[in-house]
Amino acid sequence: MIFQSHFISMAVYAALVAVVLALLRRNEPKSRWKYGIFLFLAMAGGALLFGWLMYLFTL
Image 1 (cartoon, rainbow, N blue to C red):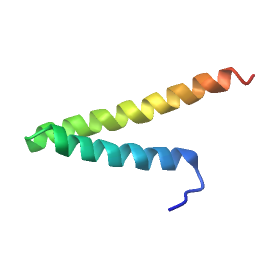
Image 2 (cartoon, rainbow, N blue to C red; image 1 turned 30 degrees about the horizontal axis):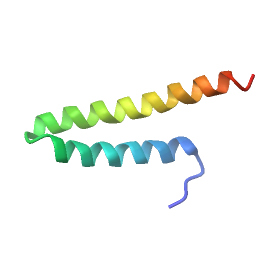
Image 3 (cartoon, one colour; image 1 turned 30 degrees about the vertical axis):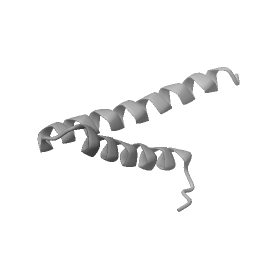
């Protein structure tokens, strides 16, 4: 599976990791949803922030 955008690849990876970790670490369905969404947002947001910071060093 090859995407044209690195962002889409990163988002798919973050979603898959978040789903797997939420299923492994939480027992209740509501808790799984909350934890999975939190993980996805943390990974996607962290990657965007880190990418933005790396961009600043190329100027």
